[in-house]
Image (cartoon, rainbow, N blue to C red; front, side, top):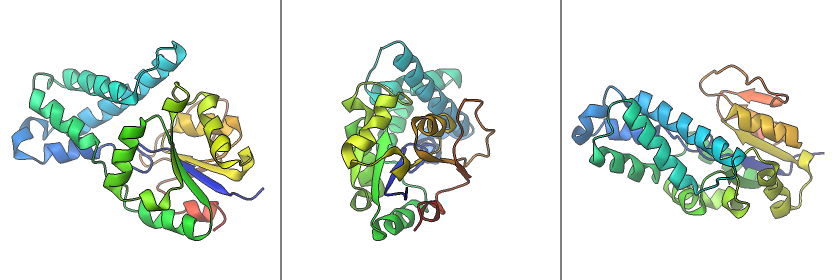
Length: 228
């Protein structure tokens, strides 16, 4: 069937999660981060994801904001920056002001202009996602923002992917699901979506039972994959 609905992961896919650490490192008041910001950003993101998986399999769900703070605290301790309360607060504040990758607005406008439905499907809480959408200025090209909080478990649980059909009334094979997380794209492939993995870092393919249908370096060609 033709693609009718394009659904995007949020953090790392539409929104640049490294931007918070990069911005803080450029500020004179946080000079200690200057040579460590990339390590902090990478460790923060890794722990943030690992904690979602562990909470999902142990039935210990919590708001994604709690997971985000826990991941940051681990990253700051791992890099020797855990004694800087002002830096911690600045990084958390900046996480609510993430910008979209440069190609995102035009890509979403092309999808909406062709009459496709567009949405975010994210581990993020509604409040966090609302802040990111507003900061990036893409609310007018999204039909909805779907959060795992409505089912109380993180991706890649199938109940999260169920939200797309429940919201849009579409069949699995009408959905193009896009994520920068290889495991997320794989999980969505196993669920039955057509998937695109945005592999910005050129990472190896995850060794999982499923694989994304498409591997891209950015989001520029998403309209083409959707048949636009």
